[in-house]
Image (cartoon, rainbow over all chains, first blue to last red; front, side, top):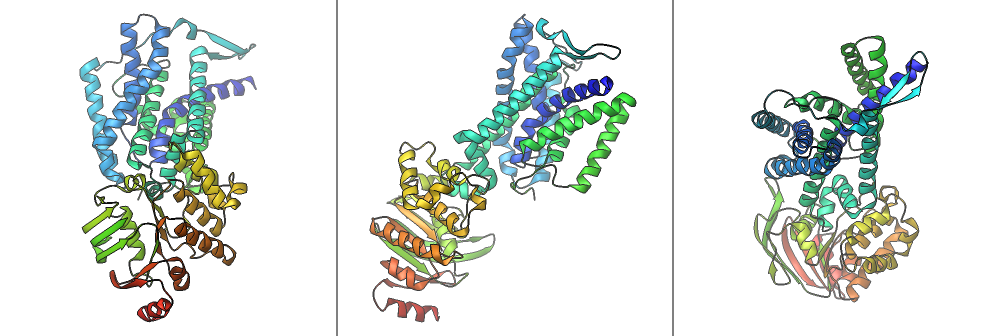
Amino acid sequence: MTVLIGQSFTGISIGAVLLLIALGLSLTFGQMGVINMAHGEFIMSGAYTTYVLQQHLTDAGTSLLLALPAAFAVAGTLGIVLERTLIRRLYTRPLDTLLVTWGVSLLLQQLARDIFGAPNVQTSTPGWLTGRITLFGGEHPVTLSHARLFILTLAVAAVVALTLTLRLTPLGRRIRAVVQHRELAEASGIATARVDRTTFFIGSGLAGVAGVALTLVGPIGPTMGTNIIIDAFLVVVVGGIGRLRGAVVAAFALGVLQALVEYSTTVSLAKVTVLIAIVAFLQWRPQGISTVRTRSLA
Amino acid sequence: MLRVEDLTAGYGRSRVLHGVSLEVPGEAVTAVLGHNGAGKSTLLRAALGLIGAGSGRVWFEDEDVTRLPAHQRVRRGMAYVPQGQQSFPQLTALENLRLVADGRRDGRAALEEALDLFPALRSLGARRAGLLSGGQRQQLAIARALITRPRLLLLDEPTEGIQPSVVAEIQRTVIELGERGLSVLLVEQHVGFALRAARRYCVLEAGRITSSGIGEPGAEERVRQALRV
């Protein structure tokens, strides 16, 4: 029993990482319908931002906390530049967007190699995140590292902040209005192009925040984005396009499934099982866990 | 107020308007009458800038707005109520209105005025717009347009497809808005109502204005003959 509980906790912490990397994508892909293959590199930019800050500030704790807003700004700015220069011209052309942003993703990877070198780098974890808490003792102790708990807290905070922004602020109303009925929004006096830009800034910025979190659980490298972008897309697709709630459920469900299967088999087999489960789920429910009407991808 | 000069517009390669010229005077209702597919809605959409003008010009209050995007024309004092009771379906009725009131200095007062015009909307504020009846959604759409305190309202078939009990109320509101001094460009199939509301009218056929006149007794007969209905 404690094994199950322990693996579930592991699953929840995997889910928290998935949720963080998918949250930004649920805005840009889920709400706006933009297939941005460079989203993973925005995550990478957040991770490298943490690394650079730590090189300049010796205190790991301060640099980590400062990295959160800094990474949001860096990744968000990259997002705005991409939206203004390329994506804006390709709305309603998803395949072209996919190819173009894939190219941008390769460019950004090479840029990272040129600046930071090809080998992975590492940040040091601040002291207050190195410990573990033990939930159940005994034969199979259930422990959770402070770093994982921090990521979980960060994911929950990001979801809450995003939900409140979308629900309660004028900007959130404008974002939802443009997603639901672009032409009527324009005809109601809303500068829809500016709303697109802002939405893209927030979605990309959240990728940067995810990048900060990933420095706590793995190395930082030029291809780190490529390795996780597929997972992020899977979470958004399974969750249902355009709904945050769906993405939250999907992230934790996939995380727990991965952890449970992983325990009795191997990591690779668990990945395969999760993919098969996703394919089966989408056969049964192609629209995902929950959906709203969004701008058509066609 | 609004001057349309030799305007052509359409969708893709198919042209719908073939050189329409029209002047909408201030403080009065002007009606555009015509059959389905004559280009009435296209005229309103092109006047607001939702579709580009192929050629010709659109002037609003002596400013050439032909190249301005729609939202900037709205900021300059135009408002638009599209055909078919359109709303933001997942937003509540109140959110539909606040969306437009946001960021306006007089937003709160304008929102109250709009709700005063359609008191029924007050009790429906928390309901999602997609769940309202057609009549309620139309009232919501008109209220949303009025919150920007427009000087010109483009109104596309406000009573089409609406339950009869609400039609009379909407007709009364349109007439009242005209009497209050708002300029209205009204597209309408319902000739009797249009001529009661409007001081001037024009008839649009196959993308061209074929006749125009003043909404006086006897005008209805002439329009019906022009439309052959």
